[in-house]
Image (cartoon, rainbow, N blue to C red; front, side, top):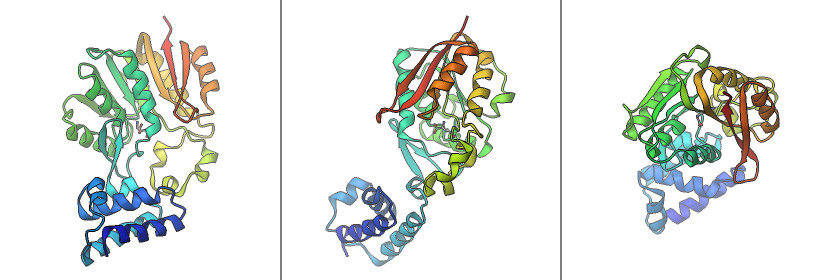
Length: 281
Ligand code: GLN
């Protein structure tokens, strides 16, 4: 059997399971099996695959058919310009979150040396991408999950910023520090009642701690906003990723709780995805 044949078999198996990215996934899994890039797979479609690799490939396909996320099988996910190691201890970085990076970079000149905090860093994707883009900024990243901090540190090492980003395993509630110019967070924001309607990939595999925003979906935002009043300098800025129906209420809350100049930005699919606000004088 050649690559082309095995790929078409595999993608129809995934399609039967309603996995939307069946074509891409079948290619990524073959690349993982053969320890080559996806591009190399596609450039060698007539090459034959040997028996032991077929076995290995079928094992990965079986995991995917059981709705294990592709990023968990291949153990990485691209975010912004970088490849991040991921496992079940962290949220898989989402392309939507790149909006917050864009917005932050938009206000920071290349030479910026601002003091930045990332709350709930997870895989470290936000903190590390910012450090790579604005090397003179001082960046601290915290997460209440010890296992997440381990993953974030591993990613920082992989991107040569292991010693340049400060990671702490601590809950934002307990975190005390000097003041920041900018704070960013992509907190868990799924309503408790909506957790069950998430796709199986997510629901069965990603950490609940990274997804659940309590009964209203907003609880962690309220906690973060209140803490940021203390952690931010006057005129310091807060950048939060939000769920598409949460903008209005959060804007109101921010404006009533020590923030102003609140703006909401939409993602590529035209849905509210990010809220930016400035701490009052
Ligand atoms: N900051 C990480 C991310 O954006 C983790 C977010 C989370 O766990 N809610 O992917």
